[in-house]
Each structure stands twice: as C-alpha cells, then as structure tokens.
Image 1 (cartoon, rainbow, N blue to C red):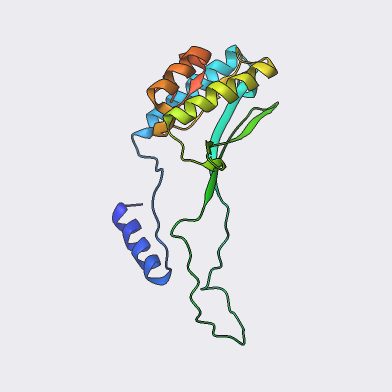
Image 2 (image 1 turned 180 degrees about the vertical axis):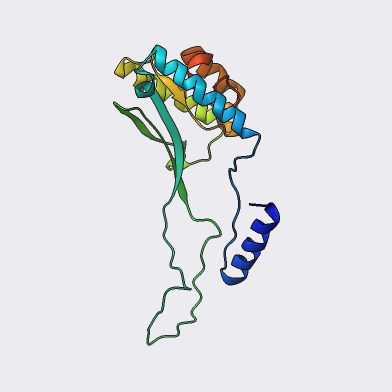
Length: 188
C-alpha cells in the first residue's frame, strides 16, 4: 500500500479516535534479502543438527505497570458527592522491568531489574551495564545449572542495550559468533 494512502487512512482514524498510531518496527523492501538469507542459513543449520531449533534460548524483557488507573472516557461514576473532584495522578506510573529466557525444555528467570537503595530494592532502567550484569550473574549460572552452555543458541532483539560493547564481548565469550542471533552479529 502506498505511504500516502496509509497517511490518509491514519489521519482519518486520528480524527475519530484519540490515539496515535506509530510504526515501531517496520519491514522495508531491503529487508527481504536478509530474511531470505537467514531462512536459508537456518535451514542449512537444521540439516546439519536437527536439534538446533530446540536449543534456541528466546529472550526478552517486558515492563509491567504497578498502578492501575481508571479510563474516565469509559467509566461513569454515580455519587452523592461532587463528581468533579480533582485526583492528582503521577505523570508516569511506576513500572517494574522483568527479563526472561526460555527454550523448548526449560525457562531461565524471571529476573527483575532493580538496584539496592537506602530503603531496599529500587526499580531502575535497563542499560548495557545492567544487562551485561544480568547475563553474567543470572543467565550463565542458570545455563550451567542445566548443563547446556555449549549447545545453546542465544537469541535477543537488537536494542542498543543488547548490543553494547561489553554485552557483545560477553556473549561472544560464552556463545561465540555462530550461536548468537541478534543485530550486529553474523546472524541478525
């Protein structure tokens, strides 16, 4: 579909609905050869080692909001007091970030990103250093516990924290270039 048509459709939708449509990840025509090359490479790898797909460690992190809020557009309140009472809400709700990995056989995690503050654990954002620490202190001991460090294929998306130099060096040390599926590695 032409880009101009998509823009017209999205403008019409935005006039009717109060939300914004954004393309977070979009496949481009230039991606087709890369996808075909990956598929052929993966099929060739499967012919050599039929257990290969079962050894992939699929990993990702997710953000969970800790406080719910009421959508006043869809909620009707019947009360005896003034319904227009102001209730202040924080600009951003508190979230916790969790990381997990799984294969066809086992799950590694979940692990939560937090740092120790004066009054106990405090939620923190993920950066390359924290991600590298999670891999070093949580993932690799978990894989060693399952006895599969030498056969696991590590898969992650290519966000900047996942391809930071210390992370790439650590992954290369434990998996080598041929057992990593990620951006900025031979198997992207």
